[in-house]
Length: 256
Image (cartoon, rainbow, N blue to C red; front, side):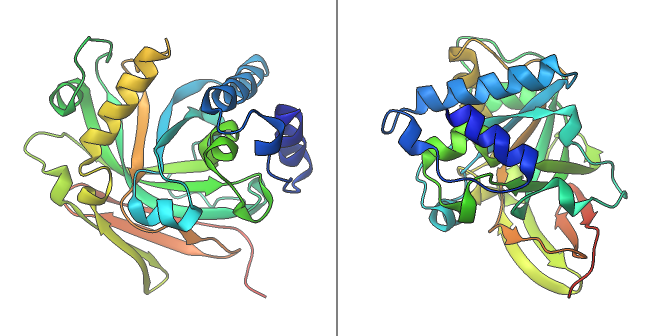
């Protein structure tokens, strides 16, 4: 029932009621089963898994959504938006945008011990990223079960210029995101579970323990560095993460 309700919302473009009442109360495992079933259906239809995202790593975002623990979702090739190409806002239902550090792995993360050092050693490069998060639940009325079942409220993403991790202090990297000329979100790597490396380590352990570990070539969106911001037709955003790169996204349509 939960999967059917979320799938109908995606197909019709009309947000649905929360699905938490359709699953056992607080059962995150059941919610991940719904997520996995949706991903499997997308892969069967021709999509390709390209990585994962960590959600709800930033205390400000947790407070914005009323959810108090991290989660993860799956990234598909159909979600990636090429840099510089306008994004059709009709692909989303209730979009919000946040800036984060993306990792692309050069090695598998499958070991018994996985911490920040192991993540750093396995990282091929990092980039500034914009994630367009999107809930299929009306009014973003979600708890942890809703967002997990809804693929961690994943929508779309775009990546900026890449660089090696060597010598980069991700914890101290400052982020500024603008809508046009206006600063709309600020933060730093420290807001992402203390360090984006911590967020990826949490994901790597969680994914390994669930039998689907992170692999070389995976893109990992490590979580928001600052508050998420609603997206309207015609919006243009640019985020700069000091020491890494800039990344931008423009949306179709115009303000009424």
